[in-house]
Amino acid sequence: MAERANSLAAGAIPEQGELVKGLGLFSATMLVVGTMIGSGIFIVSADITNQVQSPGLPYRAFGYPVLPALYLVMALFLEVQLLRYKPQYTWPGLIIVLLGVPVYWVWKKSAGLKPLSG
Image (cartoon, rainbow, N blue to C red; front, side):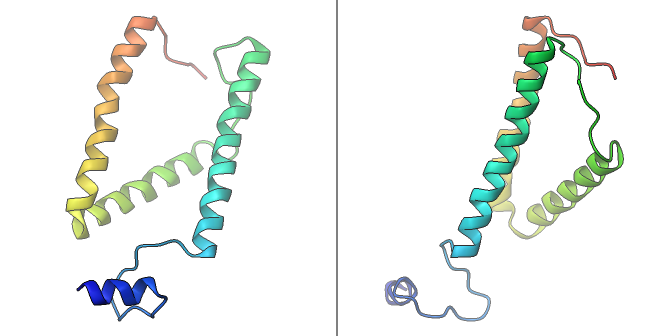
């Protein structure tokens, strides 16, 4: 087993069906690009909201409500597939995300926030 791990670390080609722990150039690039785009979306949205001095949404999202619904369907599909094939890796992340729901409700109630109305 240790020999196989050392040969993979040295750049050997993995066998069919074997996963390699590591990021290639393309994966690393996509990770950075996705992070930059994602953070840009949230930072710009917060900036616009602060400038307008409004708790509501000052703009309309492209493709609303079709694209968000499509995103939710695809995310649910991926989650179900991960739970089906790799439950030992998927459950911890899912539990962490679901633990955030009661935290959000307590925070929202204590801050006195009202739901946004479009």
